[in-house]
Structure formats: C-alpha cells, structure tokens
Length: 428
Ligand SMILES: *Cc1c(COP(=O)(O)O)cnc(C)c1O
Image 1 (tube, protein in one colour):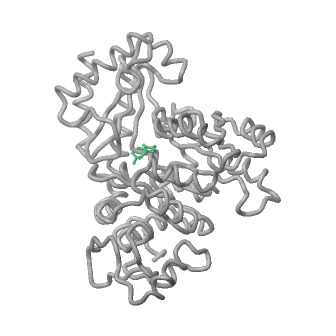
Image 2 (cartoon, rainbow, N blue to C red):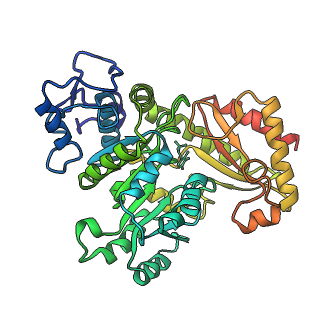
Image 3 (tube, protein in one colour):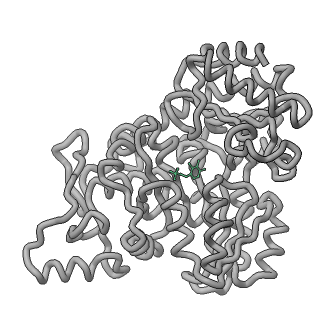
C-alpha cells in the first residue's frame, strides 16, 4: 500500500483488515446496528475484557463487536484511512471536532495539571479552556507559541504542564506555529519522564488537512480534526478525529465510550466515501484559487493587508514553505485566505459588514456562512458577526481585527470567485 501515492490510497484504502472485511464491496457499506449478536455469555464477557485493553490489538485480531458506542466496522474503516493519511499509528473518531479535542486533552489532563495553549484558537476550543477547565481544576496558560523560548520558560517553571496545544495555520488569522521547534522545546523537558507522564503536543490540523501538512512528521504527538470541515468536504455531516500513538488508543476508546461522543457510522460513511477520496483533488483546486484571490486582494486599494501562507508577504512564509507540503513534497499553503479591510477600526468594520451584505445579496460563488472547507466558497467577518457586540477598539485589543475577513475557497471557477469579490469590493 505505501508504494502508492496518498491520493490513490485515500480512494482505495485497505479493503480487508482483521478488524473488518469488505472485499466484495467497491463502495464500503454503512453498517447500521447499534448492538451485535453474541454467540455465548462467555463471548460477551470476552468482548468486554478485550475492549480498550492495551493487551488486545483490535487491528490484528477480529474484535468482538458488542455495541456501537464501543466499536463498529464502518467507523473503523474511516479511522484506519485517517491514521494512514496523517501517518499515525491509530485514529479514534468522534461525533464532532469539539468532541475530538475535548477527548484528546481529556485523556492527557487531570485536576491540578496545566495545558499551555497558543493564544489564538478556534472559538469553542477557547470556550472549553475558558469556561470549563477552571471547573475541572485544570489550569490553562495562553501564550504566543511562535515564541519558542517563551514556551521553554513556561515549561521550565511549571512542572504540571502535561499538554501543549495549538493550531497551524490558526483560526482565523492564519498565523503559523513552527511545529518542529515547539516539539523540540517539549522534548527537552520530556527527557527522563515516563512515556505516559510526558508532556504531549496536540495540534488541530483542521485548516491544513493531511494533504497540506502532516504534523506527526514534525514530531507532534496527537493530531485532532474537525471532519466537519475540509475532510468531510461537502458540508453534510459533523465529525471529529484524534490521530496519534497506539499508547493512547485504549484511553481514547474508553473516554469515548464513557463520555459518549462517538461518531455515528452513518456520519462516518460520507467522509470515507466522498470526503477522503476527493480531498487531494479538492485541495489542489482550492489552493489554486486561494493563491489567485490572495494576490488579487493584495493589490486592492480597499484591502489593508492579506494573510495567506502562499504569499511571500506572509510574515512566516519561509516556515510555511518548510512545513506545509503535500504528500509528494510540493508547497501546499492551504485553502483559506484572511484579509483586513482598509481604514480605521470603526471604518474597517463597517466596510467588512457592507462587503458581507453585498456578497450575500449579489454573489453567486461566495456564500456568507460560518464553517469552512466545503465545495462552496464561504466567507465570514468575525468583527460584525461572532464578535459584533464588542466595540472595535476592544476587538483590536483582544486580537480580533475589526475589518478582518476569513475566506474559505470552494471549487467554483477561480475567475468567477474573483469577479464576485471584485464587484462587491467596488461597492464598499
Ligand atoms: C470547526 C472547527 C473545530 C470544531 O469542529 P466541530 O466539528 O464544529 O466540532 C475545531 N477546530 C477548528 C480549527 C475548526 O475550524
């Protein structure tokens, strides 16, 4: 299998595993059985003994299926393909990206521990850290992880740090983290720690996807995904995944069983059948449009600045070139563009809101909506939407540019996207 390109492997996957066997199907079936027939009480007991048991390998022996929330074959097929895509040992899939993020950190942290997070993260991840971790007695230190020496100091001063968390590129402003450098700093403090008491690094790879960047290759321990976005790709289903070492699989399975955020087999099927097989192709087209749109916006008088890892003006362009690579080694700067409208904070915000309204009423190819990574180009303006109640000056202080706009490129023809953007910009 590994002789084939990832693009081909994402379509064919392994069709046989001791874990499941669908050799005769070209399209894998959706299994739909919440419970499984057991041949005897002893076999039921054996199934429970094997589940989430580090001594039993569900990938080498046929597991005894008991109940959907524990383990089942359609979801397992998706998990095996995702693990292969990220180059990880194991994958455990969850109902949403947030279920995956809370599980990845849930198996690493307990009361009294600390997680260090990059200062800018996805809104609900921030809410998890801000609203819920204090109740659990878990400390969260927000830091700029682009400053790796700063991270070294935090790690040296705080022996209770058990996890370092971030996104790259991060939402919404497309800052990058130097994953290898972050991991090197973490490795220094891990010298001499037991394998399960080390500091683990967790990276949300939703924006890049494995076809633009594989964090595990840079030394990251765990990758988390919202399958709802680029990997699902068509905007039909929610999902999440954690990919990482076999060491953590039993805890992740146990966590998923007990907290209950399991991915339904029916929701595992679309990313398995439509999402992953088209991921490489979609990303290539979306990146081509992202590069063209970023270059167009960079020259536009009503746009103050454009952030796209593929532009030489990106402050971390060199890092992007090193880190963001497709599976064949080509530069893969991603499918999202961030840009800021020209003007003082109040004026920039007003222009952003006006641009949203014009796109919503006039444009065919650009859709005003949250979410990202779909076949349709989606646009949103945090300054007048998610953060509308915060005054522009305060938005700036909180790191939200009042005129900042996030664009997620879809599969429309590049010229059409450019034309719709151009005419909406004319009107603001
Ligand atoms: C959407 C998103 C999430 C959350 O995923 P859900 O599937 O909506 O729970 C997490 N991280 C990033 C970067 C996202 O874009």
